[in-house]
Image (spheres, rainbow, N blue to C red):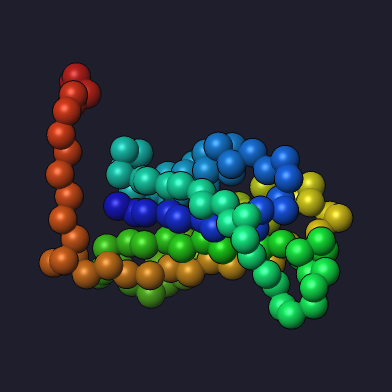
Length: 127
């Protein structure tokens, strides 16, 4: 834990998704709240999307919507800090997309610890 899912509009041509995830993972690691191997992140590119109702919106508008899921029990201030940390990280990663109006959102949600199940199978790292 945590799980980071980043949805992006398909018109963010040239977005280096791997680099964006690396920057987000680094920011989460820098918070000091997580172990490296516990951070799981992915990008879901949405080729079918719409912003608003104007038929030309997809030519000028884009979005990045991040959802960070953490186990329950963390203080509100820590969840708020993580949300703002990710927002600033995503803003830096998208600085080159000035030709679009990019809406960046971050949602921090809690998963009930009692209902989160995890297994690790396969090769384990050597000590």
